[in-house]
Image (cartoon, rainbow, N blue to C red; front, top):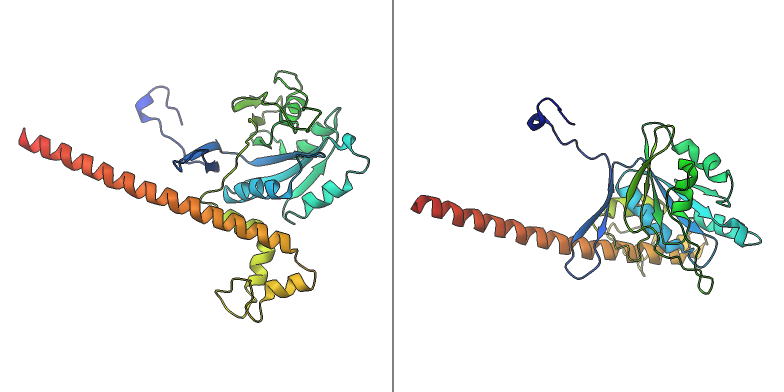
Length: 278
C-alpha cells in the first residue's frame, strides 16, 4: 500500500493467495508462480495433452491457495465428440466447474466472463499449446499476446509465452498469462490435495483403523468402495502418489529452512562477537 507522500511509511499487504511449486532441479527450492489470484483457469485441450493426473496437480495447487479452480477444455473442434474429455474433467472434483468450447469466436468471453468481474484477478495455467494466450487475448479483446499453433506430429505446444504477464481487461479485471510448465512438483500442498480428494477423505473416516493405509486392512471403507465400483482404483493411486511427493518435497524444504536458520544464527553470532571485540 503505497504512501506517496511518505514512501517509507508504505506497507506490504498480506497475500490473499499464492501458487508455488518445487522448482526444477535438485536443490529443493520453492518457485513462486503467482499471488493474489481469485480464479485459476486450468486449461487443457482435446488431444494428447489431456491428462487427469495433470489436472489434479493444478487443482490441488488452487485448493491449497484457496483460489477458485475452473477447468477449461479447449479445442473441442478437434474431436468428433468431446464429451469423454468433459466427463473426465468433471470427475476430477465435484467442487470444480468445467467449461468446454472451441476457443475461436465469442465462446471464451461468453463462458469465462462470470469469473472475470471488475477488481478480480484470474490466471491461465496449463501446458504449452493448450490455448492460454489465445484465451487471454479473447478476454482482452485484442491480439497483443503472441500465439503459435501446436506441432502436428505430437500435438505438443511451443513455448510462445516465456514469462508471466499481467494484463487489464476493459472491465477492470486483471488477467495473468503464464508460460506452460513442463514440471509441476507439489510442495506444502497437503491441505489442497486433501480438499481435492475429499471423497477419499470421507471414506477413510469410515475405516475401522484410524491409521488405515487402504492396502489390505480389514473393514477398510476405501477398499470396499473400490470393490463396489464407487471409487476408481486409479484415483486412489494418484492420491497416494501426490501425498508421497508432497511429503517428500515438504520435508526437504523444511530441512533446508532449518539449515538456513541455523546458518543465519551463526552469522549473527559472529558479527556480534566482532562488534564486542571492537
